Length: 379
Image (cartoon, rainbow, N blue to C red):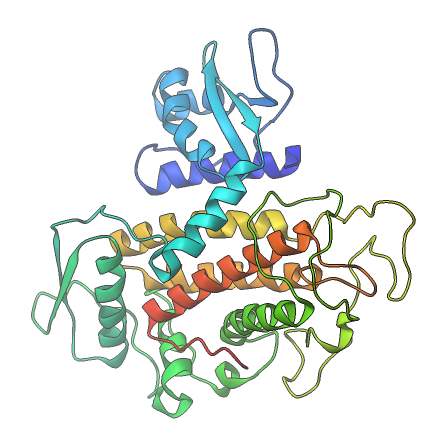
């Protein structure tokens, strides 16, 4: 994790603490991350708690105590220690990403479920309106992920009244119609148009479902090459002993169509920066490039449980829909380095990347299911 990525991690921790009501401050535009000073420890330190102490009207060490667990659970962070007047000292490590991927693959679509609403009954009183009923139906499932039970009634006074759709969304079909009603925030008027049916990059629903289908294609193509997933620290490191099985040029196997292309029109796979051209080899032990979008994908997966908690608490299924778009975009940028290129042999790095891609597909499938939208294996 670079200092820039770690700075973003710190800001996300602040935003998360604000979202759950632990801090009452404006999220700053930046967070300084530097090597620890005298008395510090770890790899990096930040003074963000000292900066927020005044606006929060709390001692800096108390602010640091609030932020510490949110930073510590971020992928790539091994430990966080509070020192001095309130400095947060951060130690990095690769084990966090492995644990995250293993947790997702073990829990499946139940990843992100918790007990923050355990034993609570959430009463949803809605008007006789298509969008309100679709939002309420979705919230029943989202609230259940947090251990609560939502009850939907048509009664006054109404406490769930999203802006109605301007026209009947039924002609779009069940999946696109639900997305059109759920993706916008409740106070925004939904757009009912055929754009939701386009298989193009401009359509966020297509990107999400396409990204999910890509994870299944990667799994099938990896099996053809003779290897399966194996969670491990990602990033640039030497390839280990290749797995048994055929080594085939993967250009004809990956079916790596760009998300803006028609599914019927494959585009040629493009090697990642720093990757040897197909058909060439590099003397000595090859070093694989750091995968693009790896950090963004890990962060998106780590934040999914928080997104579910906030969506259940605030009755906002649009939070889930928008987070699926973020996850899908990171996966679509990452997918091109999952499989070997040219004469490259499958290695530990490829198995780890496949595990991360499958974890992302699991989250996309779970999120789409909560929205009542299908997640096809082929698209």
